[in-house]
Length: 253
Image (cartoon, rainbow, N blue to C red; front, side):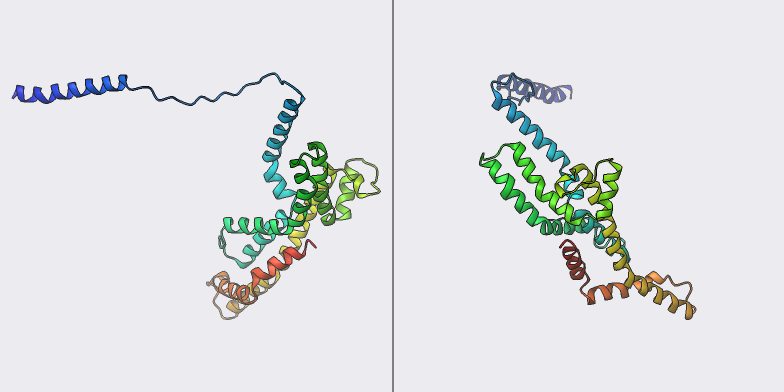
């Protein structure tokens, strides 16, 4: 019996030794090595290229804030959220659908602005007709024009007075850091106003259903349980998403 157990053990030991020898004989697999370092610039072009890369990385890091706050995205996504809350469906449509719809509506409403940025700044810069300072100045002008068209004079005067600046006489005299917060609070006010208007018909349905249930003595029945199908039916019959999208797009014109 002992000899019977020794044979498999010896065979296994020999196999392990053979595998170890083969592994030692095989060439080692090269592993990648990543290095990050600084080197002396060989000319002004290297310094300019480094500054351009730094500027691009800064813009990419600020891209979410730029898309959400300096475009039509904030107004659109707030109104869509108000619409879902007014209907009463908790997560229908889901957040991913609302944000995706808001993004594509933002692309649609901001297309003329981005077209101007592309033709006036990006394409001349890529064709080496402009340096990046002039290209950045030209790229800001269409965006500033969009924000100035959507900004209320009262909001703009508020931040001008808070910044202790002299009263601007032209649009070019308004600093961008003053224009941005005025534009944002104006967008929030417009979005809440549109959301209130969306709420009114659904609020009426809730009140009618609640009064009807109380008059019938059905006080233990939640009014939301009865009103939700009627609100969905009303929203579908009037083609609600069509009306909401139309109101959002035309509100920027």
